[in-house]
Amino acid sequence: QSALTQPASVSGSPGQSITISCTGTSSDVGSYNLVSWYQQHPGKAPKLMIYEVSKRPSGVSNRFSGSKSGNTASLTISGLQAEDEADYYCCSYAGSSPVVFGGGTKLTVL
Amino acid sequence: QVQLQESGPGLVKPSETLSLTCTVSGGSISSYYWSWIRQPAGKGLEWIGRIYTSGSTNYNPSLKSRVTMSVDTSKNQFSLKLSSVTAADTAVYYCARVRGDIVPNWFDPWGQGTLVTVSS
Image (cartoon, rainbow over all chains, first blue to last red):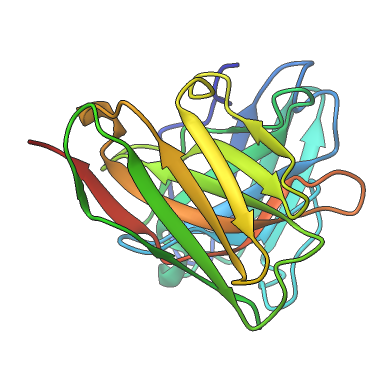
């Protein structure tokens, strides 16, 4: 079971939009609408931002949105703010071996 | 709201067994799946496994031979044991509740994490 593939880093200026991709296989991302995204600031625990591809938990800004096409899921952050600078991890249900994470993406707000 | 807190030794000797406990407060541990996830310094997240309050477990195949999880509903706690540890097991260990309407698949909330170092 391999980790999902994410870009190591992305960057954007305040106010811009960025998208982080998360590529899996037909055994995980492609087979289930069960992708979640987590934000992690340095020294802190991960925080759930998106679940089941595009659902936002209560309290998470509507600037965060998720989508999926085929074996690739995406997290889009619009109206970038300095506080969005963090690491982001995707996660997918994978059937018999239930969960697989992505390698993480460092978001830099320029 | 539900809060999780990891506890256990911060230093474990090579070849010994790492033991951690997660205490759930603000809600019942019953009728949920609970997971352990770890993160080596500067690296990504690795799912270790999950346990249901009935005691049913699923483990990461890469760790399965060394992992045991258990649950104590009377204490609102669940636990992790990882045997035969090496330096590669040095990481921050998180506990988390697993959610999902159809299948359990997302993690919320998380504990704050506890650093476990494997060293003699």
